[in-house]
Amino acid sequence: MESNKSSKVCEVEGTICEKEVQVLCYHCSKNFCRIHLIQHTQLIEDTIRTKLNLLADKFNELSSRFDDISILDNILKKPFVQLEKWRIEAYEKIDQIVENKRQELNDEFDKYRKIFLTKNEEQLIKINNSKRIIAELIQESDASANQIDDLQRLIDEADKYLSSLITHEINVVATTPIWYVDIDTHLFESQSILTNELQEYKITYVRLNGIIRNYYIKTKKYGKISDLIISFIRKYLLSEEFIQSSQSSMNSINHQPKYDFILPVKVYKKKYLLNFDDNTLLNSILDHDSIVFYETPHSINENDHTDILMPCNFRRQPNKNSFALPIFLNVPRQECRGQHILDALRDSLSKYFPLNSNIDQHQYEVYLQVKINKSLEKTNLNDVLQSEIIFNERPTCLMVDINSQIADIYEQNILERLSF
Image (cartoon, rainbow, N blue to C red; front, side, top):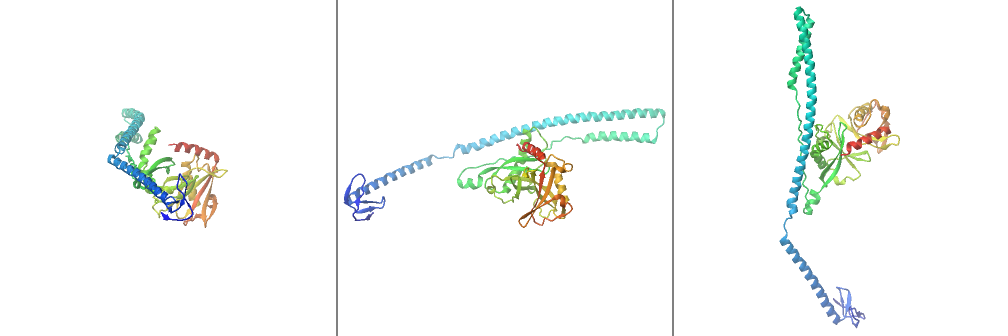
């Protein structure tokens, strides 16, 4: 408080005081006379004492709560309950897969049994006919060299057939998946925010054989694209088993994605934008961008490989709207001609689209797009079939305009293929 003698009146609350002001209170910025200053000071002290007592009571309460605190049963027991639930569901899924495989084996046995009986009957008919012919020839004591050779050939064929039966097998090709279960901790802030927080990402995986499928993969929210690829590889086989068992279609799963044979790509509105590198941060990928993994025919780490991967986008005729997932064509790095690109395109079109790329050439038009000095040059591929295409680090892609009816069929099919 500060002495502030002036003509101002005392500002005590609840009454009117006309005494000369003696002090300005910095606590409440009011002027007081000497008597009311003493009262005001006492009031402040009482108020502060009350607040301190309340704070002391709260600290005492907190101390008592720490005396009684222990690790929650939810932390100690719930994860084991969840793990046991996962174990039971995994075994149920295994049993379901095994039962489907048993049925598939029985179907194979039935097929084999029918073929086995048919082949045996064919061989026995030939043998009985040969026995009759031999009996006639013995009775006549006469046979030409050709007849003897024919009979010997039939004996060799029957003997070869009987020997082949020993080599027949029906095997179960058991590719052991990596049964992977995540542990997601939400504990102290410094641990969970940057280290353990998981996020689910939608991955579209495009195989070289034309199979396209969506997968939902959990990995570190603040990780890199390399973490997402590793998580995808770990969970691929298990996901395939689940998908195929749910469809009652237990085809042999003989494909295992390999890290070096996956090209991670950003796709926006059905257009290829760029390749992700291993260090791309996952939280930098925008929600409207699609993450697409492409199976490649050679390791993407082979920088000196004789072939390169050329992106190929698709548009619907006649409105030129983008549709379909982009694909990648495997073309020669050196001495590549337009015909090489067209051949690679035709090979791929028959896998991804409902058309015969050789017969239905009138159903699509192909353009080569090359970026030179920030400008895009577009050339009809038919005009450069015999010309050498020099890539020389210039961004080059293919644009294919496809008949609208073909596009409609593709979009209907892709909805069925991706609805997992």
